[in-house]
Image (cartoon, rainbow, N blue to C red; front, side, top):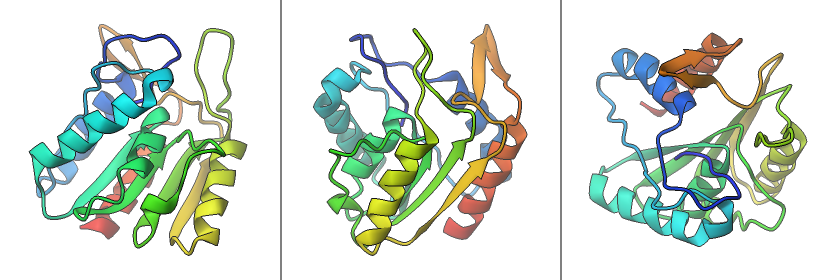
Length: 186
């Protein structure tokens, strides 16, 4: 599940997720990766993004599902984690605002991976690791098991689009951290 922005724009696949899936899918041929394409990818239309995610889970109809949520997609994934097919959420630099209910995570697992240098800059979305850590700690207080991993020197994005996805520094560390969680899921 992809991130978003304030402006109401058509949903697209992010360069970060496209690059990651390109590295992870060959390593995990037994897993299926599916994209949730929001009609509008905006945190100002969050409920619509959640509806799109629920429809995508329904369409994929896998027995076991691990939701990968990047940035705003982390909040979307948490919001739909109460689907009986969902076993856990893997938040990648996830936006977990203080007002977000974490009740859908009960009986699930939450793993968070975040870049230590992640910040919002003028015109560039980002999520402070302190925000995802607070969300993770709130989940732990509810009895939700999981891990929190901070990648030193990593930014918010994992890759940028320059015609094709181009990895940013520390992208390989992101892949290895995610692969470890996928191995545990398998």
